[in-house]
Length: 321
Image (tube, rainbow, N blue to C red; front, top):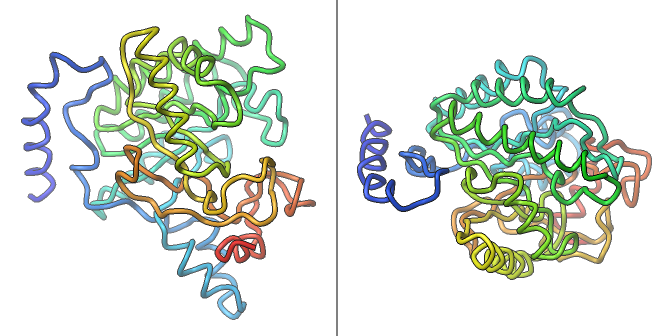
């Protein structure tokens, strides 16, 4: 009953806005349909703590990382994607919590960086996959971060590949609008150290940002929240001046407590940041990357693979050394 009342009130308050906001506006705000954010019960940090209860680092990792609401990433490893997103959002729905999901399976993923290369086998395969991703969520409340790095990763791509990528993202947003009306989708916009605000505003717009709730920043990176807010404001100024609209944004604060030292791949001396919450200078501050998960075979994660949980890295990140 509580959720039904919240849904009704959200829909009623949204009605006057329907005539003025961008096409991405939904009838309900997913944060009003839920009571706080969902803690992934099967995150890499939680699995490690459960498997290593006698480890001296387990208590700190459990208290500071494993029980903070963090996104779950979905890709080819997720199996039947409709089933996977349905199960995850269904569990969150039963707990009356808001889940954060990351769609990370675009064709030619990490094409220029390479540490997380992979993704769908073709643009058409991705179209099927992302449609099923959205369909699995359905009417349940959710937040989705759409394809981290996809708009910053243009350095080695030709124009045909760029056009192909932007088309895939535009179609993805269409699928969420059609199938997941209570989901807020944020297109990933890289970080302040990647592309200029002018360039990123153009890329976002050309990939269909009008259909999205907004854009995400700093996913799997380390720039401070204030640096990201300044960058987001610059992006929005460009969007306003060139295209006549602005968008809300979210910031990944999972590993930005000490800011960036200029390195992006498992740098030493980083620290966890502000836990997942609404507000904080952005629409939401979110833990999108699980602290302690490797960026790849590099830095303090030498010998690891992208996504592998490294308890020593996680432990040091709690204290910032």
